[in-house]
Length: 300
View 1 (cartoon, helix red, strand yellow):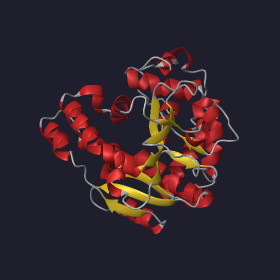
View 2 (cartoon, rainbow, N blue to C red):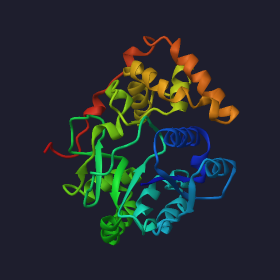
View 3 (tube, one colour):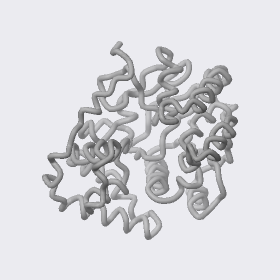
View 4 (cartoon, rainbow, N blue to C red):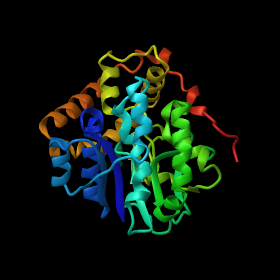
């Protein structure tokens, strides 16, 4: 099965670039998925690395790009986060296979995903923060039925454009997916989108580093993290509130450090060392996980 990921040029650097390489290395080792990157921007050293590691790169532009660039011109948005909208292009790109697999780049494959029996009308997804709450899904891992999404695309794009222009949802495509496809999406097994803050699961197929990325973790343990913003409090709380689970998840990525470019390998090695000796009680009073009880809709 084809495996789609998406990036813009800014995403090839820093945390997201490192997570992308880890995802590709783990997929190569544990799966027979065919990696395809939907990409916008100029090619660079990172895209060359991905191609050298078997990733097919497809230059991809959003049909509604002008809606975003208009806001950028008004300094009401930034192009740096353009990559996360590219998941809406999967159904426009895939014209051969009925079903494909999509993930965000911040995942690690632990084994071959069992996808053969997952046959949604549009897509299948798993919950966001609470694994028992199916009223709101995380769009970071999906089995996508390309023809179904393509048939719906015109109406979905119209909906996106209207809401981007009105600056709703903080330009958050996942919220748009949840509202537009309310009651029309299928359930994905939790093991295919397992989060570190759900604890250790030996049956997990994919670990999704939803929330804290490697750079945030490093900033927290180096006392460089900004705890004053809502976003900072949430990310910091997720990491420190479940630090043992994150340490366990690190074991899944340590084996790939030697296959990374030198700078990336050094970053990971330092993070592993620093987290292992970190005083987890230091900011215990700041940990607040109430936001993880988020409910956009009533429980079904």
